[in-house]
Image (cartoon, rainbow, N blue to C red; front, side, top):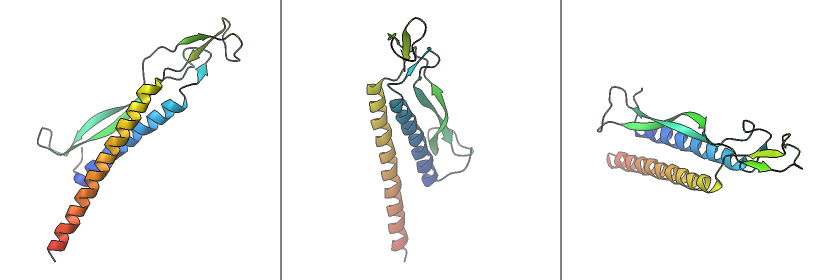
Length: 138
């Protein structure tokens, strides 16, 4: 835990959303990939977020932000597809599709993008207000 100000909160929140967008981009890039075994098939990934409170504070009225602590593969079973002519097919003629749901990924990408934009707008507004306050003191 650390002491941080509003700009630190915004920076960490935007960083967390970038991790989320990068995970989504990786998932979409691998959505149509195939594997020879269920283990080799691409498994969709998601970041794990954790709330971080300002040093010495933990409660409803304290300054807090979010941090992406890790990225984990989702526990989904890949779909077996019968394609005996595919070069990656196993001895039974099956290949295994990735566990990515493209519709779910698109919704997640839009949500992450909006969250990022909202934080950026809040930080920009705070910066403008601080500049105006400083100008009033002159």
